[in-house]
Figure 1 (cartoon, rainbow, N blue to C red):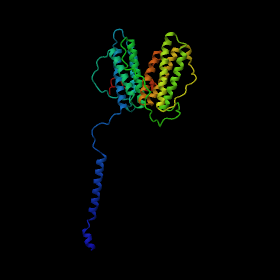
Figure 2 (tube, rainbow, N blue to C red):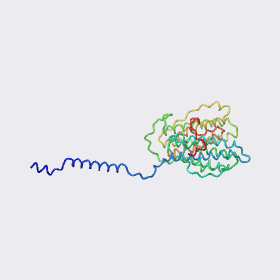
Figure 3 (cartoon, rainbow, N blue to C red):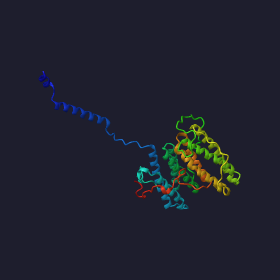
Figure 4 (cartoon, rainbow, N blue to C red):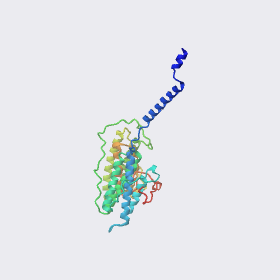
Length: 350
């Protein structure tokens, strides 16, 4: 009986061969599932990177145009008219270099030679670039949004400066949209702290800082009205009305974001500059408010960020109107010396 059974049983080496074959088939089958064939399509580039790269390439192209205008100035237009724009756009290109690129610029999408710029075409292109950066800032990631907003505002203001200097039409800034905070649905805000710390990097903390900034602006403008000459007082009165409206909007947005509205202070200390030159002090006040709204751009989304971007632009315009010194990147506390250097013009096109 045992002999008959052993005759029907397959040899042991065939059993081992069958097991190895089954395992091999499982490995091959699993590998085919886990490693699908490459579709050949490149991975989607994040919007923020696309927006940054586009801003960088535009800054380089505009810098080339400004350099051309400076090298061959038109009749009655000195080269010095354009040097400020060249410096500004160089700073923007340096700031927009990708952190992972180790100083290597992104490639320009087209190698076609651009037509020779004119003063009018340059101003138009500069303003259009600025507006594009502001629109992209409303959708980009936090840090990129703040950078794009700063670049866009500086370019819009420089286009307006040049248009005024050269007696050319001021480029259209698009519709003057005022933030609408009433009637918006209240959303859930589980991450909002009930009492935001002034230095906390949260939306409610940034909104609280914006509210406090507008509290101070209203107070200082009220005091300044009694010390300014007639012409400056008219400008300050209009600015006061604007700040009162901005304060209401900032408080409303704070509530919509489920934050606590800071209480108003009884008063604010005035700078030593205020006594000697209240108009210049108002310009300084506006300039010092820019990082507050820059933070809010980075730390907010949706309608709150749109309001922050538009308010940042308006504050930079008011600062310029009072004669306050402009920065290359409004809303950013950044030392130009810390920015990476560009490659030589011959190789900056990748």
